[in-house]
Length: 214
Image (cartoon, rainbow, N blue to C red):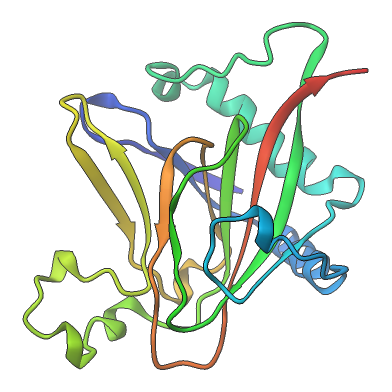
């Protein structure tokens, strides 16, 4: 597993951008296939067709990916500048994977700007059935500045040190499959609609919370 920090200007903390190993991706597809199809839509902000809860068998994904990332976050010099989750700080507390789900987003659907609850959240791109560069060539986008074309993008939204709203977009294509963004739960983000494909965009998301060990 390889990752790097993504930060905004003035050393403000951003998020982790992570390439997951093949065995992890294979495991995640297995969890998707084994999903009981418990509907998550009533608990989520997404205006999309399907969202189903997932199980993390024997805490495999948490122990091998999420917990190491949370530990690295707490000890890395870049992140400790502005966000130091030495939480849970009390000896009787621990972090755990509280919610874990898969999203199926079809063309024209949107996951509006929102944030999550807990300490950390993540999003994993499992299947991207389009290329944002090709999506930007759609006729209705003619005349729009390239930087303002957001079709199919995943975007973070945050404030800089002067209170200005900053948007950072991932212009997705199939090369992003198998990558994850790991971020503080309150970091706002959204997914724009895409067009001209009947295949769904498949992603996994989840939240890390804190609880007493007993």
